[in-house]
Image 1 (tube, helix red, strand yellow):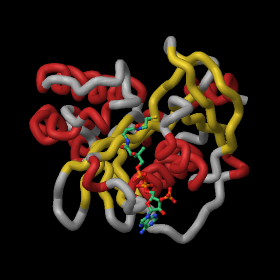
Image 2 (cartoon, protein in one colour):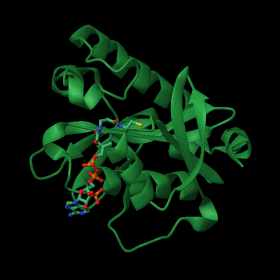
Image 3 (cartoon, helix red, strand yellow):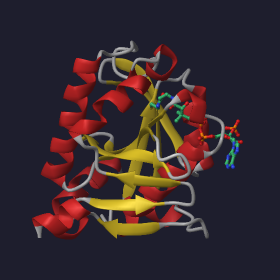
Length: 206
Ligand SMILES: CC(C)(COP(=O)(O)OP(=O)(O)OC[C@H]1O[C@@H](n2cnc3c(N)ncnc32)[C@H](O)[C@@H]1OP(=O)(O)O)[C@@H](O)C(=O)NCCC(=O)NCCS
């Protein structure tokens, strides 16, 4: 099923999905910009946030600048990716959430990371639910995976809140991981706020 999801990428309608942005009840998911580097760096320098990301260590401002560049380029290349998550009430950039290309075995993957002061409020689940809906409705993916380290309890809880099912433990990018997945037909549409916006970047590119 996951391999099938990865093949789905061939049919992703890039012309309509490129640079789309999302809005939920409390959040805006928009494209990253290079100017986000300092604000984003305040998140990526937190050891607790970075504990299960990459090599499990905080990263420098320079590395954060490079990461943002990678995220923007990946988004442009494939038409989807990780959005910057903005907290509507405060206007603050509080992390990222989105879909990454994953691997041929895992398929398209859900990814999320929030600044610590914003944990425990359901914001990751809210953002991730909108991303799953986007993946199934706009990108027409047949399934979406999520992968984390076994001890990343908070991340696993988000997957469970979303209705994702545990598939297996596996080695992923050299690390022991747990692999969850959800099929389009099992994704429950609820009445939570979901607004799809074509971004200014998209308008400018058109
Ligand atoms: C993974 C991560 C995003 C999860 O954050 P989180 O705050 O635990 O997740 P949510 O925002 O969805 O909040 C869920 C919790 O808020 C609670 N909550 C409080 N108010 C809520 C509300 N209004 N609506 C929904 N849930 C609410 C829920 O009960 C839930 O707690 P529970 O899981 O014990 O039931 C966060 O820990 C993080 O950024 N970690 C570092 C990066 C990382 O590891 N990313 C994953 C890599 S694979």
